[in-house]
Image 1 (cartoon, rainbow, N blue to C red):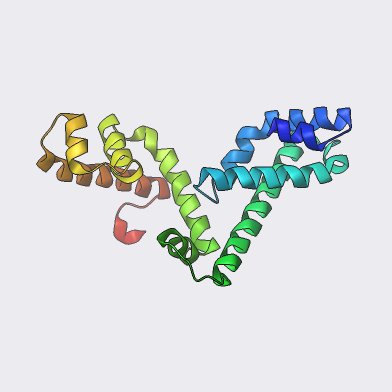
Image 2 (cartoon, rainbow, N blue to C red):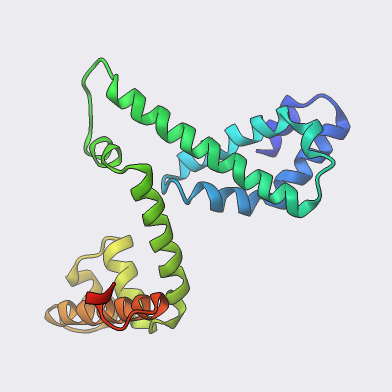
Length: 191
């Protein structure tokens, strides 16, 4: 990204400012982009498009205080993300070759409201994650993020494959219990 900034800006002061901005806010930019997508290439595209937008507003953002600038960057990333998601939905809806794959069908079913709700749930999960036991974290991550089957999980935990099903049930219950406590609810029925 720094190479891109260096190649697109001619003024040395502007170039130096934008490189500083990128280095200073890189993690914030990507964290915001990942709230709207889980695809690394899409997040990279969102950040790059946002950098282009920020370069166009360099005279506006240069005098901003650092905390205000951070908010402005988050807003830019958010708007770029939403615009990109809308354009992807539009392209899918108007695709002339009729080619759609399973991921296209899945992502077009998710509205922005659902995406925001999933993002909030992910934030809640991140808050309770450290409170889960190492084994619960390993089981949930292995099963739902890394896609391990029960046999692979059993091999890694040195237990029988038949034990994994109950261990996963307990891990899910522990996570749900912590999520409910975070929301101030005693039972799932109240949520």
